[in-house]
Length: 118
View 1 (cartoon, rainbow, N blue to C red):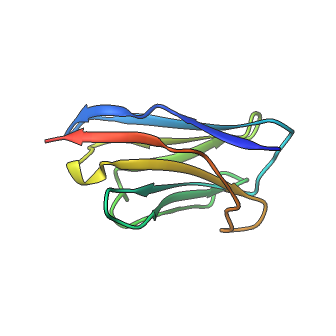
View 2: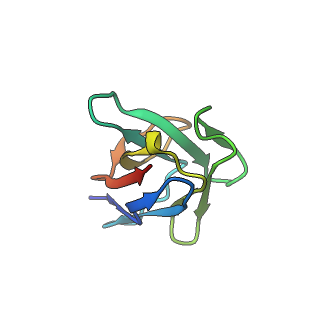
């Protein structure tokens, strides 16, 4: 069984940066789509960024465009989220997700907390 394991969350001041990582553990797994979602307290989970296996096609939520960058290393199927110019409204639990189809995510990580102080 495949599990996704996130790392890199933490506490940072507004304007700072963090880099999240996510890698699968368990059996060999080479997903087509990998992405990041987030859920703030009292809010629904929302899409943040996604990337296809080629690494060329990416998508971003409007709220993070120009500040966040998603990338992946296909050698070990690790996906990264570089977050710059962080704002307090970016505070949330960030979840990694992966799937074998385009924009379909069927495996999820347990999440990592990102807290941005003002």
